[in-house]
Every structure is written in C-alpha cells, then in structure tokens.
Image (cartoon, rainbow, N blue to C red; front, side, top):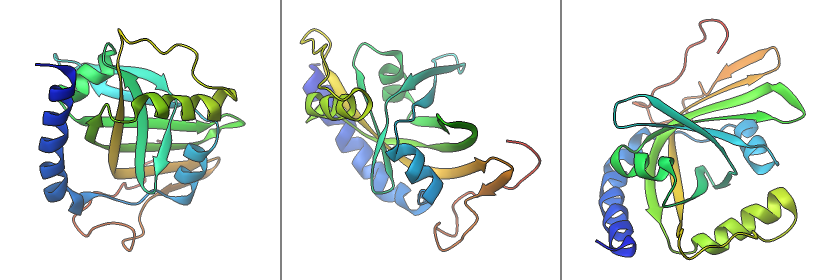
Length: 180
C-alpha cells in the first residue's frame, strides 16, 4: 500500500473514531497553551509493539486545543502511532523546568497533506528559518493529538485540569497525590 493510501486509510478510520471519541476530549489549560506556543520542546511517548515506551523530543504547536507534531514516516513514533494511537507528551518551560504540563491523549489524525509546509513553520518557530533537510525519501506527516487528560505543575503550584466546564463529564481528570 502506498504512503498516501496508507495515510488516507488511517485518517478516515481515525475520523470515525474521533467522532465517537470526542466526548472524552479536554481543553488545554492556559499554561499548556502558553508552553506549546513558546519555543519549548515536547517529549512524546508512544508504545512499542512489546508495550515498552518510546520517547523522543519534538517540536510542537497547537490548533486550538489539538496538539500538533510532525514526523517522517521512518520515525519509530510514526510506526507506533499507526498501530496504537495512545500518546503522552511532557512539555516544560525552557526558562523554568519546574513549570511543566503533561498531556495524555490519542493521535486522531495522521496525514501527509501539508506536512512539508508544516515542518517549515515549526522550524521558523524554533530556529527562525525554513527546515533545511527536506528529503523525498523520507516523507513527512502531521500528527494531530486530541488531549484527554491534562495535568500541569507550575513551580510549587500543582493543578490538574479539574474545571468540569473544560471537560466532558466522562473525561478523566487527574487527582493530586503528591508530586507528578
């Protein structure tokens, strides 16, 4: 199956799943938005076929409350997310590592449409220039992640996205049990 057909299949399946899944989506907190909008890297954790975690630092942005990352189809996170869409991200403030946000959710869309332009935009955000390493042998994809659980740690202040007006009644909300 070609990459394009493979991505379209994944997108169409995930769109149907996303419609039934949308009820468990939570909104990003203001701190999460601030950290994502800044030049802070996200550590993205996916699951290997044997269930062990795989973690990689990535550039990140958002579209409203959807977290957006980019990867080549040769990356392990792409292969992992095609198989199992569960994902976790940790983003900390580069100027204060004790200010951090943890997001758990699902990759609800993986598409190659606009992926090259997207990596250029991310490179402008983080490096101030277009991405220099476009390679046709390593096609890129955009991965959109729908958050279902957001927890933040702002220095000494711990806050799990507890505001029920931000979450669907059935969405999981963190409870403080000490340090994150």
